Image (tube, rainbow, N blue to C red; front, side, top):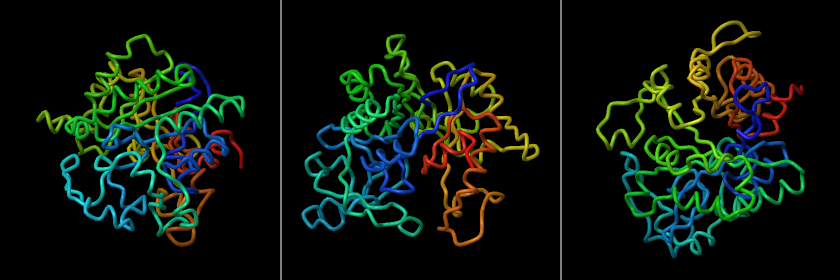
Length: 344
């Protein structure tokens, strides 16, 4: 949420979801650079840890789907099965590699059935520090501050390994002159780490906000699972749950489907957006993607699942914007920019 402020009529913010991930392999410096070129207000690095405690950008700590790790015979023995947030996953995990080892890998398109693989093999895994440096350079070049929206992935899991990321993330933000002044929003699907971050940040970091991510209504934050609490994301979307979130966070991130738009096309409304605003929270919707496969039924176009439907994607974003969302995560920031700015 780089540009808008609670209580103002500022335009909604366009957040590049994993960079311009519809056009470049996600979470690469090339994807972030393309996103900024295409008008993103902020870029989103999902953060996981290496074995030596370096924060790197990957959507998951299991990397067989987004890198060429399976082609590296020297790492064949590191294939393993792990229980991640209650689900058993088999593959290669960032916490089993040093940063130097991860830098020998190259990124691949995560969705080859839907998106081009033209850039496979060209880009390294990026560190948080490299992403901050990129945002700082681009901000200076373009004369506008590029925001950062880091997501802390699987916080309880990594803390259990002795690789907790929160303090390292704050240290990195404090170490860079740019992130001491640029808009930064920290996000998590868990709740306890955001509460702890609120306490740590206090009033000393006015440029840093906190965003509580919410998943499907029946699912639970994994820290609630570990604590044997019954709280679901659906509970947190109720007025009482939203008031609880407002005690430690500034915004919620919700799946587009959970907005449950109602009303006619010219004036859509969302009970969730209205309740969140009543609680003093901003609303960020995720994730807008341009392919038919991902679009809501009323926004799909002709063609196969992989077909790009720019008009449909812009229409879907504009419907949610009309319902009052404050920011949006999109895989194609150029389309998000057009949606927000009212361009055809």
